[in-house]
Image (cartoon, rainbow, N blue to C red; front, side, top):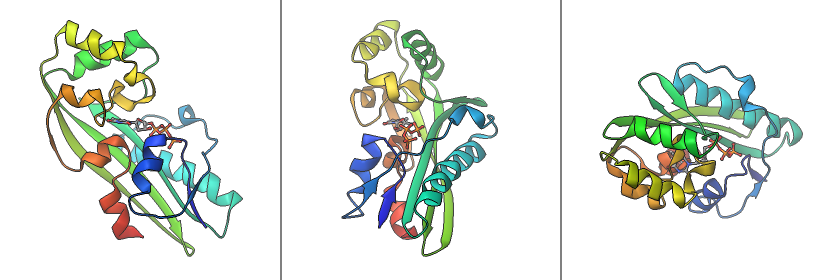
Length: 179
Ligand SMILES: Cc1cn([C@H]2C[C@H](O)[C@@H](COP(=O)(O)OP(=O)(O)OP(=O)(O)O)O2)c(=O)[nH]c1=O
């Protein structure tokens, strides 16, 4: 059995492109128990904690988990607390290049593989009006870094260097090579 240890609808949609049949079992962990460290270490630790928690309940299954953050100038941005927080994050990222990191953890046939994929994302310079218009669409609410590149958030993005799907939350070309 293949389990995606995630409640993210975006991760479920992306995984369908490479795995025909799987079930989803969200991990029940408190992400705040993991201290902020370097972004790559942070997402790797969280992906591992999510995967291990679900794998412990399903010891013979293949289990895939992931965690995505946005990082800019040593600050890690998870999901925004509220609209004000989201506005502050987007103002920080405006006109700058930040990184999206996704940690991936996979256990298959008793073997554990894990990796971290990084994508550079450059935002246009964003006016307050552009930020408010984007926030009005409420897309920011469950997204690390307060934007969804796969949605209207794409209008904030001048360019990326790296895997697009990694920003969304599942670097499927890398994962396909792990399977
Ligand atoms: C940057 C970015 C993040 N995201 C989303 C992907 C993830 O759902 C979310 C990052 O939060 P995560 O904590 O990685 O994932 P999650 O809580 O949504 O789901 P789970 O832990 O159960 O796997 O941000 C986008 O959808 N688009 C983007 O451009």
